[in-house]
Length: 417
Ligand code: UDP
Image 1: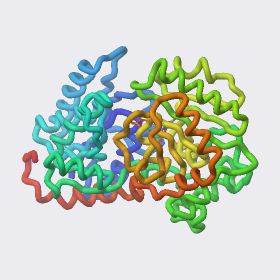
Image 2: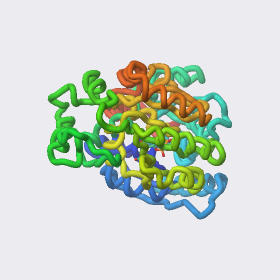
Image 3: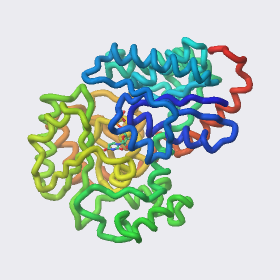
Image 4: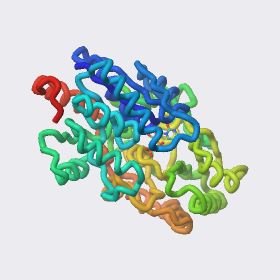
């Protein structure tokens, strides 16, 4: 099966890497990976780390590019690439402009599309914009819909997608997170190291301890995939500051709202019993909102975006996550880390419903109050930390590959849908 994987941003690289690696190892597949370079800076390093080789690089990004220009260039570039390579199918992920254009360009040439992370919906085409438009369009075009959860499968059924084209696979982000942690390469970015060397990936003992994940983890108390491991890892530890990981980047909250949130984060740091870490997104607007208020505080560490190995290690070592990122909302519950979601809506309500995350909006005062409650109320904290991750078991890519191989022989050549 000649499969063309199309990606262009950091989250797409993370969520398609398990599929690309599984196809590369499977003799039935002949995969090619096309990068559009929509997020060039964070992408190349990420793909290298994730052991994904780019076959074709379209490098479409231009200075101060608007959405229409980007869309035009992407449909054109991807259209040419597809017509030259004539793949049997095109794989896209999520809701980016790259994914939407990949699906559209494939459909123009009657090449069937497989959509990874299908069926997420807010139901409001303007929110978030343009992601909701992108994901709905891709849903209309795709032949295979790989839904991360039952809820997303339900959205697709509701829109009339036939049942046999939908498969609930779990989210590939969990596959990748476990794969990365099992390699034991990452270094947590918090200032306060683990007190137990066996718990610190910066020491040889710690690394050896972590790599037992690869063999399935002999000690269930150390394995984030087991309830015991989640409970063991997630309790707020005494004797050191609580570690709070913060990631903020969404367009909707940039500006005054984000500046107010930065003030609340500063108040949290002022409590004196917690340490904040902010890997800063490359966006200048994010930097302008956060840096003037938080930079220089003795209990706030601001760093450039972390490589994925270090980010995964940092997530595994934190106590609490404050984020507006989609991927981080999915990753944190699988490691037993409570999440406060700094958005008004989420297209991933599963973690909120399961009790692992709380949607708190972007009001700065609410942010401070909710974080304070979690830091002070151990039972509340433990209740959130011990929820089983609703986003899957880390075997999504396996299910995707099985489904594509099963269906492929049944598809008449050149027939879309
Ligand atoms: N991530 C990373 N380094 C960082 C921050 C995030 O590698 O400094 C990873 C994280 O593990 C998650 C993904 O990037 O899987 C999320 O990307 P982003 O927040 O850009 O996009 P979203 O998930 O909101 O689409």
